[in-house]
Length: 242
Length: 242
DNA sequence: TGCTGTGAACCGGTTCACAGCG
DNA sequence: CGCTGTGAACCGGTTCACAGCA
Image (spheres, rainbow over the protein chains, first blue to last red):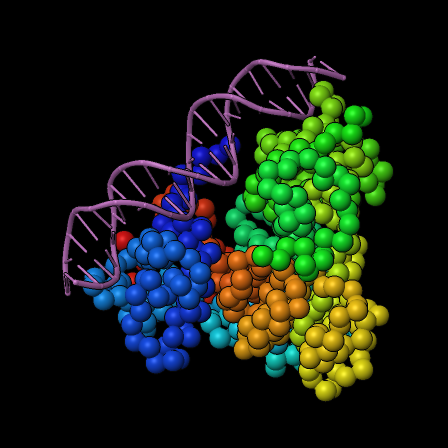
């Protein structure tokens, strides 16, 4: 139970998680030629409360104009800078199955400071293939990259069984940020940051809420029992009609 | 057992989000033939505090044995039931690019109550293709499914531009749970549940933390050693001026 | 006037510490 | 005893309401 003395985070995690959303909306507005937005307008576009938006932005500094709103360009730039998108982030993807291919060819990848510098997969069938201008290499080549672009972010898109090994290797060569799509909990050193994205988890959360709605719809509000038996088809579209 | 009328207690969202994780760990333990776990062991496996785990599980009921721990099978079943995985969830995927293919062939999909009943894509090149035993159809076929399995969960894996239209159609035919992989904010009626998974957002959050670490490393505040040069281009000197 | 920026109240969720029970 | 289950303290984050300024 170390007290972590040096960890002074200026911007709350919850705010950081929303900044990309704000940035996306601002980019769209900029494309449409909009020059200025109020917190009310922008928050509506993103689906949060205006007070939330203002408080979030206040963590970056005072970039609004009272009585008017925010200048779209300025705000977009300040958010980009706060997120670190004004610098270059070399990314490597490990595991070039369907998911890896999808990630590598995802356009949003390139648009904002992220640049794919390496793709790895040990499947011989993929040998020599190039995706988004980058050749797929066997994973052991990771170690022979000494001269090349250092990897800032590693994306794991392998089966769960390989994930920990891949992760260890990435950490070994200095990667300190990992995005994990494999359904596995990775153990890493203290200073490595792992985020996990899991389809299965998301589906299960949706299923939970769907079940709740089905149960609520079947029973008049206030009923608090007899849910054990109802394992019928919660999928009936009419069940929850308003 | 006196047919415990599993009291409908509200399960906090934060707990629901962790249940799939617990379930995965329990499944692995079951495979290994483990019969019983303590909160200490299970919580270590998923990376949460033991008190957290116990409180989470307490929302489902009292399925532990004091002085001993939890029976793996029983607990796994109770979590499955709480999440609604003991019933069948028909899923449809719209957009069969790389991502759609990855999702459709994802094994974790089938394992726990989720069943793909339809795949949609308007690309003529995909006409007639079958993934995981299901044929890809043009999206307009969605409306002619009247007799077929009703869709409980819709997965949107289209480009952002098509997402809202697809979403509207899904809602129209009665889908009330949507998993959105497109980088777009969907507007839906009150009673529709949307979860969004966005690669770009995750990368940006990682970038933020990486930047924080880099900055902390540059300014000796008694923090950890400097980074292993994995971020070549140093941060803008005037960035994040306090 | 109309908006931003923010102290203060509020709320959900986490952690602690121990009571309760096999 | 040992471990679960839980009231109570605590904490981060959200919302409210208004002060402050163009």
